[in-house]
Length: 86
Image (tube, rainbow, N blue to C red; front, side):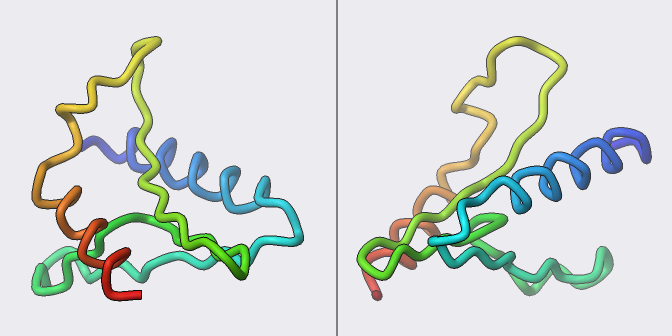
């Protein structure tokens, strides 16, 4: 991933965070340092309405669509595990 792509992704995440309605709690999963890959977050953000927990994975693309195959099955299972343990 190029440095410019990373900046675009970070800006997209910031815009997402700032767009969340005030009545939802939104927090970001903390990323592990680049050299330390033992932390494997299920998503980028989680939102809590008081009734529901929603996990959000932010992705950017040059194209007009995004293939779901770009999200690994390991990450999908991590999201499901997180949801089922609540």
